[in-house]
Image (cartoon, rainbow, N blue to C red):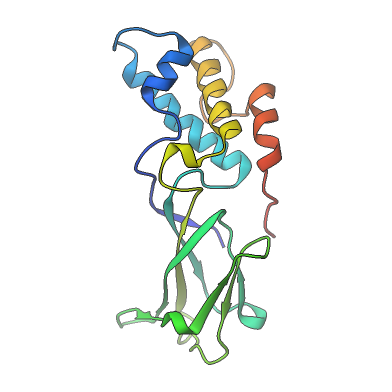
Length: 190
């Protein structure tokens, strides 16, 4: 059950101006590079920690309801369930009424509890789609400061070492950035 990104965040956790101050850059000639590195830094921190920093939408797709109709959501932190749909061959998807499920935020991982009367997807080609909003919030200030600092350290590392041999953006985190992310690392779901 790998989540599929639907809508990414509207902003980055670190602004271009803040990153330029951190790098002590003047002028605009490096803006495109720094902006790309900020996005790559966010994606790397999100992948490493297995969480979403800013509000974004993801889809979880299942072939059938899991045992007990309890879906462990592979995204964190969960803000809301946007929709649950049954996808049936040769027909329009059926939207499941919000009365048929409940979000359990007190568990880790967050769970979606499906009512016993909720229908099953029809046949071997049916599926279940769960759209989830996740992230710490929609503004950069909602992201914990250590995670924003990890992005800044990562961007600075890549900016200072561009052209050097070594892992490109999206590679392994340097030790100082990893230390900042470590308290937020999420367990891998089986």
